[in-house]
Image (cartoon, rainbow, N blue to C red; front, side, top):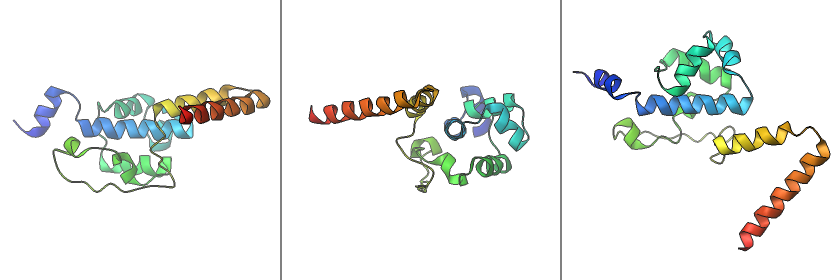
Length: 141
């Protein structure tokens, strides 16, 4: 049995799942729907969904299209992956400082979405002041 066949029996490959999560992260950062991203790269939203879950493996050509559409280098999709996900192989992790910030994760994206759902500019400004105040208090504890 080949390695690929054993991957199928055991579920999605962890690298495919990681790449899918990074596609989803960047898509959400840009405010794209799965449908909009799919149209941009020539896929249905269901296919995008499968890539994001890691159910389907993203080929090199598709990964290149995702990178171009989402405005990131291909290496962005592998950032943060551990060596164990690559079967122990050492993989150089490029830093994409103009695009990737390690503080941008699902929780941060949820916070940003909540912030922009506040339609009153004054309320948003007060919300930011409140968050800064809480952060300063937390540093003092």
